Length: 73
Image 1 (cartoon, rainbow, N blue to C red):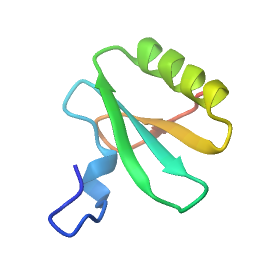
Image 2: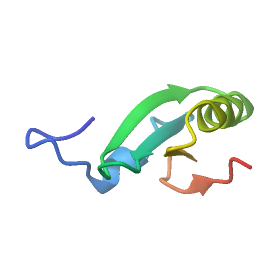
Image 3: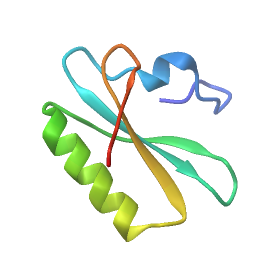
């Protein structure tokens, strides 16, 4: 979650151990937020794809527990 000042840190891009995190970047204002953590990579990717199709204005990215991004498309 964002720190006390509302800033996203490098650690926020790392999912909990063994999980996969979806992050959303708002194209209208550049805000970043954590959407959800998932236990299974395929589920996280499917949800991110659905969110991307449903909301073309924002960008959704999946990250693993090391902070590496996983291609959604």
